[in-house]
Image (cartoon, rainbow, N blue to C red; front, side, top):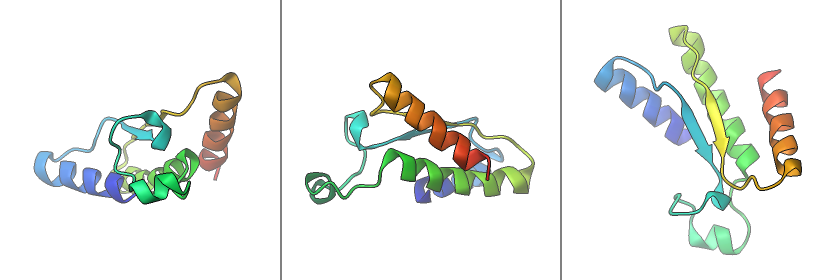
Length: 97
């Protein structure tokens, strides 16, 4: 959420526009994603679902303020149909609020 806010504010200030979309990746996406090693080794990192919810809350404020739509895509750590069904359910529940 914090990163999404910084990105949206920065784009608006520097380019007078907002991002066309935002991609949310969890700790299972691979590569360096900014999760502290201690959190990863103790399984205390924010889940993909929690990250999506935080980002969507921030994005909604920018959408309402500037009358735009900023799609949020969820990626990484989705391997099976069950994973996909779970993510779709979470996305629907967050968007229905």
